[in-house]
Length: 107
Image (tube, rainbow, N blue to C red; front, top):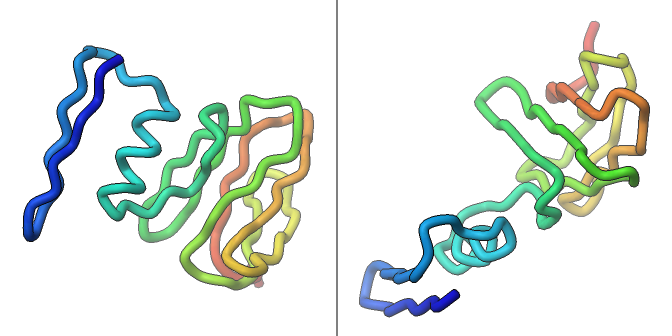
């Protein structure tokens, strides 16, 4: 795969000579462009909006997610709470590989 980029004053232009980008390459391009990346693992999928963080861990191990805000996140699927420390949250391996996280404790 051939990849090149050119940096101008206020933007970066990327050229990739393939139709389907590998996940790791797309992640690297996003980081170079200044995009916040929630997971470096190409088998950990995230969906984020203003209310929730959806995570699907397609690995057989725990996963680490990077977050912009450090606080407690509650998983609406299993009811467990996880503390974000130093911008990271560790989600343990579980039978149901999906997480639906909301900020703060549920009351």
